[in-house]
Length: 565
Ligand code: ATP
Ligand code: MG
Ligand code: MG
Ligand code: MG
Image (cartoon, rainbow, N blue to C red; front, side, top):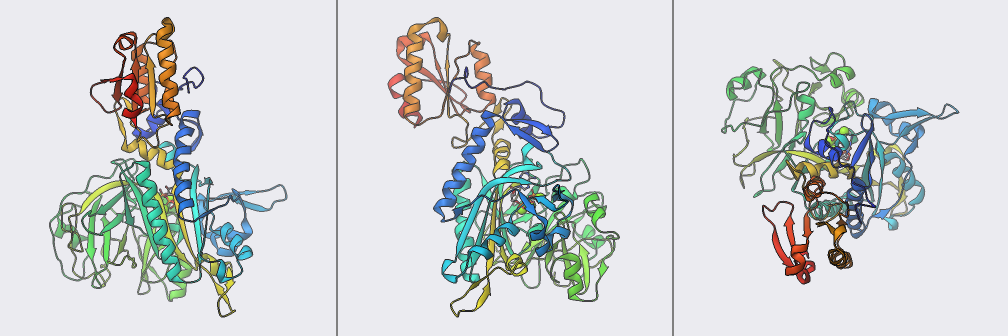
C-alpha cells in the first residue's frame, strides 16, 4: 500500500472521554471513530488489525476441528423464553419489537440460537462431539460503555459451542479449546495468562478466562508461573468507588485466624482500615478449596447491584434450595449470577451478597464465594484463614504468587446441560434412547484484543504492534523521492521485493518532511522502518530502525529482505 492511496487518518487531539492509552491511541492513529457511546466505525487501518486477529483465530479454530457457521444478530424472544434468560438477562440485553409487535433481541451471545440449531440438526450420538463457531457482531447494552472498543455496546466476538454425549467428551473438547486459545494468544504475540474464573451470567461449573496482562486491566488476577495456580481475583470494577481505580495489592504475610470472623476481626488481623477499599485475600477452606476475596471496607453497594436487588445490605433468607435457585440462579453453596457480574453464595438457607469472589480447589472444580458484610460471620467452610498474596508461596506450595492486572480477552465454559436441558436438545444414544447433550462454550473478544494489544504495547510516541497484528509490518520512508528518478526506481524495487517476500508494506509516498513521516509511522506502530535516501543510494544501503530500537543501522539493499525475515 502507498499512503497516497491509503490515507492515514492520524490526529493530534484525543477525545475527552478517552481515559486509557489504547482508547487515545486508537483515535489518534486513526483506527476507529466514535459514532455514539460504545459504538464505533473501524477505519481501513484499524480494520486491517481486526482482520488479522480474526484470521489467526479462524485458522486455529479450524485446526482444532471447529466448524464455522454464521448465526443471526437478530434473535426471537421465544428462544430466550425457553431458557428463562429473556427475564433473567437484565437491561444489558438489547430488546426490540418488529412491526408486528413481536419481540426480538440483538444477540449478546448465541447459546439459544446454537442450541436450537443443534436440537434440529443433530440426531445421533454418531454426530458427536461437534463444535461450531462463528465470528460475528454482538450487542450488549453495557451500563458504562468505555475505553473505546474495550467495552463497547457493539463488538466482534468469536464464539464457539460444543455438543457432547458425556462429560468425558466435554472435558476433552474443553482441553482442546484451552490449547487452541493458548496457541491463538501466543500467535498474537501477547503476554497473557489463563486463570480459573467464576462463570458470570452464562452459568455452568467450569470456566477459565484468558487475560492479556496490562496495568490498566479491569480485573486483578493471581497466578504463579512455577505452579498450576491461577485465579481471577474478580471484578475490581464493580467494587471500586465511582471514578476510582483499584490500588495495587500490598504484600501481606501469611496469617492464620480462628474459625469465625467478622469483617472487623479481619480488618484487625490484617491491619486493613475500613476506608482502604480494595485488598486481595486468598483463603484456604477446610476442604482445601481456595477462595479469593477482595476485602472491602465500606460496604457501599454498587448502583448496578442496588438497582437489581432491594435490601441487599442484609443477607436474604430462603426457606428451601428451590427458592434460592429461583431467586439467584445458582445452587446452594455455589457461585451464581444475579444480573451483572454479581457472584453470590447461597449457603445454609442464607444468601450472602458477594462484592467479589471466586475460588477453586486444586483440581479446578469447586467455586465458592462470600461477602464481607459487617457482622456477618464467614461461612464455616472457610476454616483457617490464610493470606496468599504478592510474593507469597502459592497455595499448592509450588511457586510464588504474582498479582497483576489483566484484560479479559477470552472465556471458556463447560455449560453442562444448562441450555440443552431447558431447550430439550437431545440425540439418540447408543442404547437407542433419547439423551440430552452436554455443551461447552468458548468466546474471544476479537475487537477487545486489538485494544488489549495496544494497552500492552505502546510508548509516548504511539502504538507498538506485535508483528502478527501490525496493520503493516514494514514502512518505507523515502527521502525526497519525488526529486530523484534514481531514488524512485530503488524505492519501487525494494517495495516490490518486500511485497513478493510476503510482507505487508506501507510505502510513504507523501511529499512531507521526514520527521512528519516518522512520527506518523511511530504513532500507527509499524514494527520496522526503512529509510531510503540519496546518500544510501551511493553506499547501496537503507537505514533500518525497529519501532523500539534506539538507533538505526545500515543494511545493504540485497540483504534487507532476509534481514526482516
Ligand atoms: P466482561 O467481564 O469484560 O464484561 P464478559 O465476561 O461479560 O466480559 P463474556 O460473556 O465472557 O464477556 O464474552 C466473551 C468475550 O467477549 C469476553 O472475554 C470479552 O473479551 C469480550 N467482551 C465482552 N463484553 C465486551 C464488550 N462490551 N466490548 C468488547 N468486548 C467484550
Ligand atoms: Mg467477565
Ligand atoms: Mg460483561
Ligand atoms: Mg467472561
